[in-house]
Length: 85
Image (cartoon, rainbow, N blue to C red; front, top):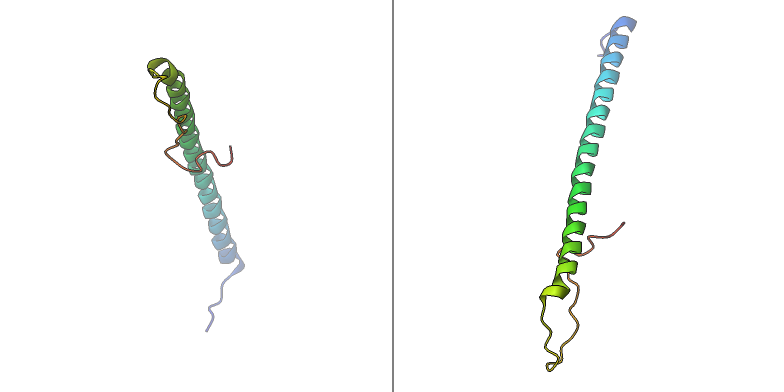
């Protein structure tokens, strides 16, 4: 039912498995770092765009004092986009 395996064959199989696991872990760490950098730069671009639009908005709008209006609501395109920051 079970085949006999020598200690040398077992050690070889275990070494190959360990090498495969180390390689997979290194690839996963590399991919995670790459995605983290993408999201970090994307978040920085969004913050810069929001800051620029908030600086430009008051100077470019003309307010008519004769018409009562509600203050503008801040609208984020992604709800919960700032969670965790």
